[in-house]
Length: 143
Image (cartoon, rainbow, N blue to C red; front, side):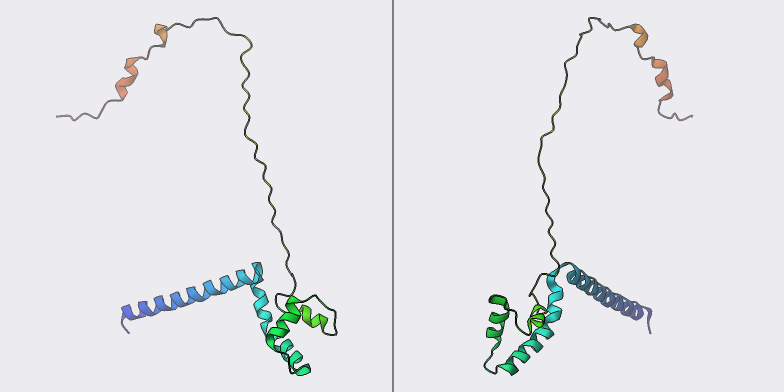
């Protein structure tokens, strides 16, 4: 098998594994931090609907949904099973409330208590000595 074909196969395998890993991690995130885990209860919804349909053959799915989701909660014999239906109750009720009060920054500058009446004049002792700049010369070429 040529080298380029083996490299292409490894790239395809890596892309497939990377895609599966991304889907797996996204699934874990959605199941943990959203209500998407409720979709896992859909098989229970179907079984519960079938039980109601066996008890009352005239029961259709829209009536079943209306009874279990849009009418007032009535405690019946199968109330515990009704509570296990998807999107029936709040299993994870979290509230993130953040309150921020804006207060502008206040800067207080106190005026000086006493003004200095001294006058500072320029003195020759503070002059820059030009001999210090002799070391900062460009390199010279010796001929």
